[in-house]
Image (cartoon, rainbow over all chains, first blue to last red; front, top):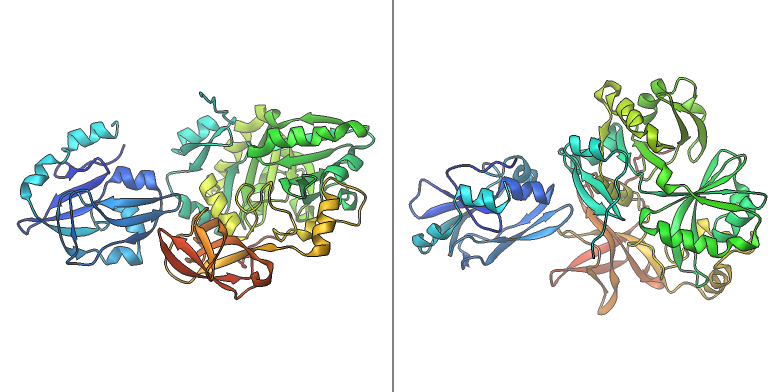
Length: 129
Length: 367
């Protein structure tokens, strides 16, 4: 069973969105299910702070041993911070996807967009769990 | 089209161990266990890993002409084998293209050919096409034979206590003997596809679960390893994978496998084509490369030599042992030498690559 924390919301493409202490800023990464399906992550290509993305626009790529996947921006917004730590040790995405394996912090353009994301219950159903 | 996948006798053990099962060559096979491909790779480089490779095909050839027949359908020279010895070889089309690569075993009373799972049916049809001229009998033993590969520098140390009647030390690299492991009659072959020391254990399906349990129990040291790490381990050694590095359209001379082509032995299927190719020189050669920039070279990505397209990446991975992207590609023969610079196109971006000496991994325990 993949971990699905109660306090997050999700995309159908297996990104999670977590509120931060800063109003209007969220943390984005990939879910435990996604890291399990991908297998060992080898590289992650992330954008620079300041880059802007539309809803479900690819913001980066993740290379695992078996496949490469695009990372999708859950809601429109501007990158305010990227996790530099995962470049040196991408395996943290496999070990701790909801913690040390976070990828970007995003200033959300339209906070209402967050309401359209999947609840933990809906995401669990989405992955057949 | 509904495809019914075959299962090896180890299927339930894989599932119980938490393996991720994938369709491979008509079988449901473990691509990895919960530890992940990188960890499994390191287990084999440093300790001992156990692979289910039952999906490989085994053909047995008996009869007066068994040796002559095998010599006719393979490129290497099985007459050079002593009883108890193994040889890497391949089957060729008349065109010189590779039908499959294989291992040839010489027993006192028979020969055994071990072939790739994905090619078992093709190989079986191919070799039978030439059998009528020879006094020999071919039996496809693939469905009756289970195969485990125990690989890693600790392989002998963990296997020996389970095989008290066999002196493993006396089995040289690419040699084999018949004996019992955990009470199970096996062909014990010091061969593998990893660059590490190790053994391949051919045995009957009925004994498979017993043998696996005995091996993985040994001091808890032996860990199961899936097909994912099998691929990264073999690629670090630049061992060719059929369907990637070699195929029906490539010849052994192009693939750097000239050492398994014995043109001076008697006639064999594909000989005339290879003689002609050798005389005029090959136009392309398989090289190993490293990417000089960060990227993951995958099978099928375009390769560029200056402005010219030069095929595609045949095999590619980020080497778990070396931490750098490695791969193989065919380059025009004039450029196919270590130091040659070319480019690999990854999602529209061309990244610098350099041809290097292989194997990529030079510290294996293989002997």
